[in-house]
Length: 108
Length: 172
Image 1 (cartoon, one colour):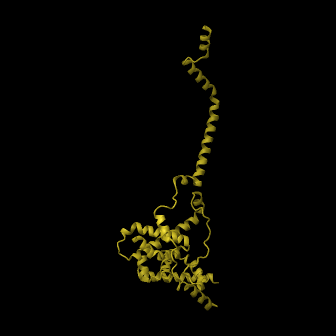
Image 2 (cartoon, each protein chain N blue to C red):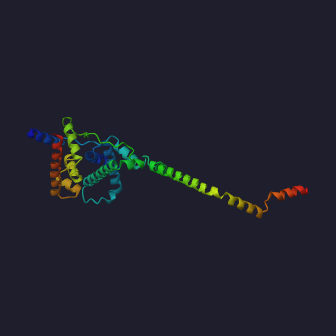
Image 3 (cartoon, helix red, strand yellow):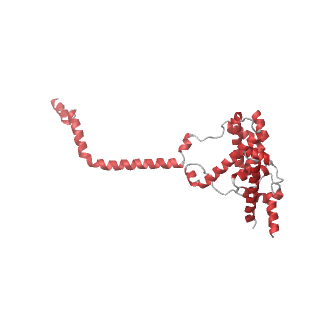
């Protein structure tokens, strides 16, 4: 049995002894020339941005911005009265009160 | 014209060497193209210290090994590669490789041998492929690999030992 196995192994080791060269595929030079002349499609910048990792990162960024905006919005909802006061003081400074308009109409 | 002549003269040698190492026709053509592109770009730095064929064989074996390493790292980091948009091809074990130049009666044995060759360390793989597939003498192999002839003899001896061990397991 051992002899048979050894013979089998030697046969396998010698299986390439009479082989011929694998020839290059047909039109190898044509395809090579095309590649060298840059006719193969190259990855553009836009395609690079569409990679899954970057799409995921962009989505997370948008979500993070949304969360920040929502949280900031909740904080500032408690400050409405001070905003109203600010608006009124500006209006007074520039004489934008409604009462002035009424006075003009009365005079007429 | 000169470049086309060079390609026509060497394309079979380059392709045959590449396919013996990467064991896949599509990959071998890729490697062969890369070899000739490198030859085209760096032919001016070829100083004729060795034969042109030696230089081209050296570029071929280097490129083929690079390709193998890249394929292995794709397997290892397949998940990350797919996330970054590379490696969208399914990652699966390559089927048995059948070299086009092997005679029909030896195809099955040759497939077993190539499977074992794929597991050899890089230097042993190169030496064995150049000697068995390209019929290069030990002197020519030593020129390509830039090692001494005794070093090539040692590589071949160890390659055959390793192949025998692997084939013993396959044939039980």
